[in-house]
Amino acid sequence: MAGRFAGQTFVTCSNNGVTALAHINTREHFRLMNLVFGFLRASGYPEAANRFWQEFARKGGPIFTFVDVNRFWQHRDIYSGDPAMLESALIVIEAEDGVVGKSGLYVPFSNGAEIGHQGEDAKARELVWLTKSDEFIELLYGRL
Image (cartoon, rainbow, N blue to C red; front, side, top):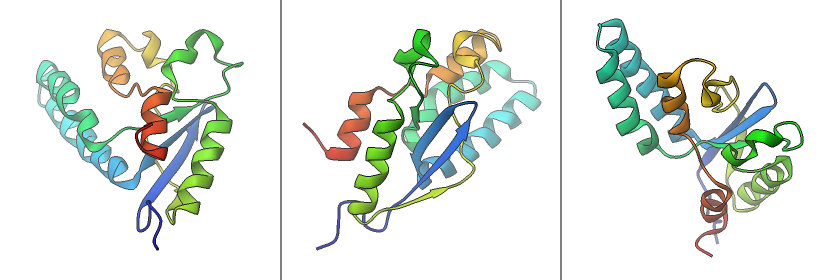
C-alpha cells in the first residue's frame, strides 16, 4: 500500500539560519505570485500589488519555517518549529513514500522583513506566510 505522500515532492531551502519546507506546488505558486506582484509594482500599482499579495499568497499552500529557537528566542512565535521538528518531518515524508529535495524556495522570516526592517508593506507581505506548529503537525500527521 502506498504511503500518504506517495508521488509528492517537498523542497527545503535555508537562508540566514532559517530553513523552509514546502510542497513543490507551493514553490511554483510563489514563483508565479512574485512575477505578478513585480509586474504590478513596476507598472505603477503598488497598492494593487499589495492587495494581490495579501489575497493570493497563501492559496498555493503554506511554507513552513524552522529555526533554532535559542538563536531567535525573541521572535520564536513566528516560526513553525525547530530543527528537530523539521528532521521528524523529513523522516515521515520519506517513510510515507514522499520525496524531499533541496531547491530554490522562498524562505520567510529570514531577512528581517517580518519585524519591519524593510518597511510596513514588506512586513505585511511577510506575515502572510506565518504558519504555526499545529498547522504543520496537521499537515504531517493529519487531524489530531
